[in-house]
Length: 196
Image (cartoon, rainbow, N blue to C red; front, side, top):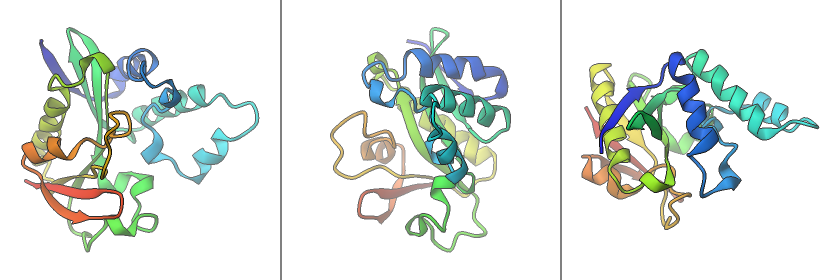
């Protein structure tokens, strides 16, 4: 199986949307409107999604396209035989609205002068899980983060999650085998880091 990892750029928007439209959640229709925009949502987006008559799929799909075009949504696509079969959302920690230090102070130390790459989500097509795609995506995130001068890569695997769909932050075992170390244990998640 030939897996090719590509950094998300505006010219790959069609591939990104095709993945979320057709393969990402074929086993979990409840989450099919995700388009991986959750960690970038703020109060304004929340209000616009709840307006009468709003189709949440269309809302989030358009939001994702806008975020990609404007350099807000970042990460990597995994192609298998030319078709996107996986995705990881990886960006500067400060770029995520949902990780803001005022909203989630427990995720922050005294890190003002650190450059941190955060991983918030993986989405792998159901038929392609457990084939090494997430490992390849994670490897590319770490490789590029090192080249881009980041101090470390940080992720937030959830505790006591057996359900693959709910384990979208990536399982602890994935990070451990990739050289991440436990930084802190919180009530519902761990903070793991790979120092570069």
